[in-house]
Length: 442
Image (cartoon, rainbow, N blue to C red; front, side):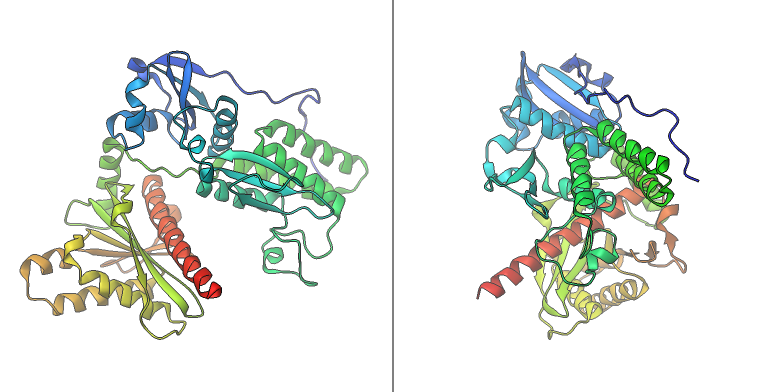
């Protein structure tokens, strides 16, 4: 028996944009430590809009650690507005809606059309969904603009689990890989049902979350009334999955970490990995290839908990084109360790399990054996090697016999590890795709 929702949403409910609170810049300590959107005012004009996992910390970073772009407008800010949201996804969507409505002067998205991101849903008998930079196809529905492509891709990745969709007009006669993952409607879908789900996806992306939930609950009630309990149960599971995603999905990239935040995280991290030195710099590595061809390695660098893209490095794998990720990783680490001028980190994080951890330790020891310079040997010897096994969700640490389940890590350490690993993977994939495109064109 399917349990019905006792208190359905009012059918007349219309999603509306909440009013935001505005305070003086001098009172920014009153900002909430919550996810949401913030607005910078010069007089009555909104000059910048941003989203944040933590509104107070993000706004403070604009003033305490201004970037090159911040310097264009930060001195002009007189007042700060903010709106709390229940999730990061809602913050992402609300930011897009507010930017579209107010077109603030100093948002980069309005200075360079190439930075637009739109969710595109084509029209026709079998609509497809994809992300584009510009509005070019008149026969499609565009939702946006969104500022961050990475956050938008993560959001769609989560929502596709609830509302499976096509990304290509052609589909094989049998089930594809996406079908087996529950992300594709399959070769023979119910087109009417598919289009209904796309309409709900559009509602979510437009910020009309409650309207989407009301539609799903109404659909479940109709199925239950018709005694189609199997369909009702499937819709109920979809509602629960959507509620979990909207409430817990992490999609916003936290680019800046305040000194206070890092100090607390640093102490916990040093204790967990048993580091004998203060951790300032962490490097993370990943390998990307297709059966050994066009293999590349990536090295991303976080300093005091924040990415430092000026120190990122790309490696084109030199070994023979064979599918051997372990050997490729060793090559990348060995080449990196021959560059003391890049300054060595306190921690190296590697994508992989115990085998990758051991090859990292081996590369470090071989580097030590090949140098006689004390000023180089000491920082290399002190590097702590750790690795993340995403399949089994474990963290391996040099010098510790047993791995730590990721779920047992303190939340701030889990977030740090995942951000490093996601960024290294993104950087490697981007470089590999660039080489693959160049190769295909030639």
